[in-house]
Image (cartoon, rainbow, N blue to C red; front, side):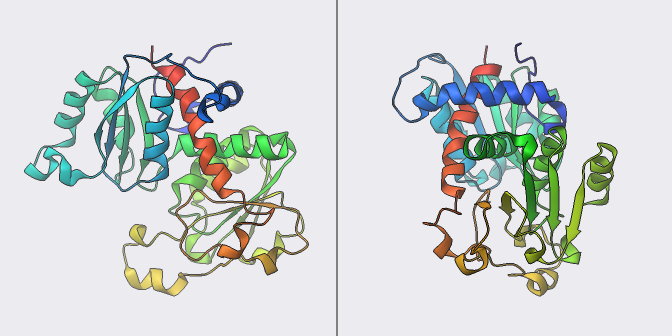
Length: 304
């Protein structure tokens, strides 16, 4: 079985077999990601990095992934260093960089941008996050983390916690978990519930979903607590953000007696206490590392 997708835009474009292929290949990439082995499979290839929104882990792990495979990167990590400051539109930028690179990675604050860009260029396009839309490569590394640490994904109970309305990571992840028939609990304030269309899609897929405002309702049974930041930058009204800022804080005391692992796409603000970092619960830094082999697997699969 091969991997036929040209672009990585939405997890909805993946079949379960596509996901399993990438997860299996990621495991083969791990020794290279750890510098235990070397690879020049993408020697001479260039990855264009177009980050219109801030990024640390996604951007740096893509750069690392490309260079671990012998390739190189070009691009910008803030629009102030590009001709966007001179008024150049997105289309002209991507058409230009698409002529320089063998694939493009783009992050943008507008939902749907990555799919639009894929229609404008001839090279493969990877969505590194489009507003409150999708973040498919984060989902793949999340699944890889669960598989590596807990085994069979299909047997898990995953609780998604925090900003489920604007959080693109949980939108993508919920669709992927549905493909594996995972039991899901959704924990959020009323104002940040999972979008209705996503709930409808999950129900149509036959997925068991429990919604609650109280994190204590899921502590006893969940295998994974997937915590997300309440994103100030997504709120149209700052006062609404202030009302629910800090709605959940997970600390080591709360976790006592739980057998769950705690994951987070990062960055965090105050939703996970630092006293969780060095416990057996906290797996978010390991999760961040797994972004490298997973993105290596994706780059190897789409750059021909």
